[in-house]
Image (cartoon, rainbow, N blue to C red):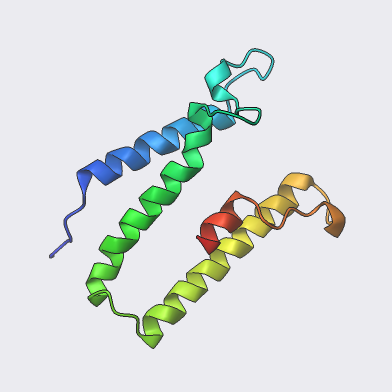
Length: 121
């Protein structure tokens, strides 16, 4: 079986980013959170504020390797695959936001959550 080579640095960076995402999302007690695990108020940044940009960078880098299989050309089949994946990730994001709000009240629905932004990115 001929498996494609993986870029170890990208896999390590992805793992570290996901570990940081888990720590930021669940720091233990929200009453005693280490300051770098909170988002910056407005000016400045903390390591927490880097999780999303890091993840988007990882996605963009991985897409280059993925599109390498199609010789970086856009065909109808590739476009359909991209649009289908975008729609599925966007709908998963909506479902998570509906589930997280515990209500089906459309006025409280957060359409542009993190998963939705990832899908559009």
